[in-house]
Length: 317
Image (cartoon, rainbow, N blue to C red; front, side, top):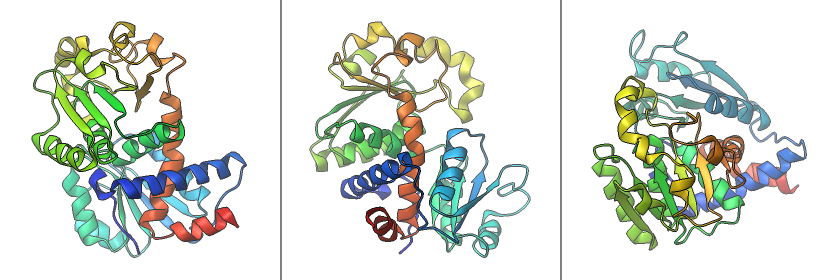
């Protein structure tokens, strides 16, 4: 059975752990230069309103490493809601492709795609959430042997789409999630409420604060992101003085666990949200996260297309 993956809440803790196991097996296979054929004959449409390096490359290569194909449709080829309605675009694509992977501005665009399209839809980033990034990040912790229950995870910076997805997914897994943002840049009330509810169910924790030292205190994972995301880049200048006290640097990390891992979803603005010394330190797993976008997204694609069991048979066969 096929399914959409539009937001982090679409996967509960059990499903996430199942897909982490699958991604680990897929990654081990890839390291031996072995590819799967579970999606032979399948084609993905990569519908992108925003520029991309990691997301475009990993979804494109991921489909090919699963035996399928991908076609990229950027803003010059397809203008959502301008040249043609999302409904009509979806109705065209469903006649040609098997899955739609969309990187868009508005979350409602994904919802419109999913409502109109028979093939499943994956959120490859919206202004509200970046669930595939969060899954890759948490998979990276999983493969490092981190036990999610009560692991203190600190997110420092803007309460943006990546932050929202990490809060929801991390709370589902029972993590003690701590978010520090400047005043006025907190995650939305709806995201906080959802994450808090999930944390109660999982016996995890959630703290949202304006004090980065409080968030980092005794943390075993410290995560940051750019201070101005794609849809807020015009605010970069005015944000800089507000966010400077939230820079992840050696002084801030003194409050974290000595072996705390350093995380960033990239692209990084070195010298702003993170210093070179921290970005390149021995505890940095930033580029492991980037690598794992490929393998985690392959697992998500297989799940959305209902092809997990076929892939497992290939892996063990």
